[in-house]
Image (cartoon, rainbow, N blue to C red; front, side):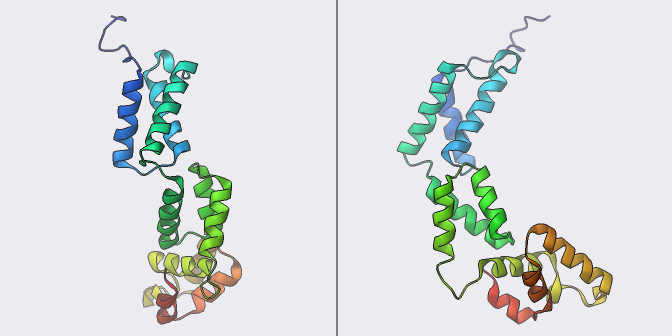
Length: 187
């Protein structure tokens, strides 16, 4: 029965998009660009045969996103700072954090300003701090168990850190440091 009312996609309205935006923002923090992408996917799922949003629907999406920004539910600068701190604590290098923020829809100038602001303290090397967090999370270097002190294991740790995006000098320093030294570097 092809005309089954249960199988037909539900109609997309401006009210639906506003409610969907609020529901999404109630669960996740987001940038304006990311919220627009999320709403576009929702519209696409509800359109027949998953067609792209119409011009009218794109206007509704833009209005819903603008309303969320105006009400303060979406703040790209705040989102960028929170995401930056979170990724740094997880042990992501600056280059990866920068790429992630851009992928999430944070403007290039905002990313550049944020990284410059975070690097303002010459005493703190953010990549070194992130590498220390990564080593602790993965139990590398001084955090590894004593029974895993083989040359092969050390080479695998180096390779994993290099693949993550840390420079060879940073990897060498982290894997050659003591646990106390690394704990002082943690963000």
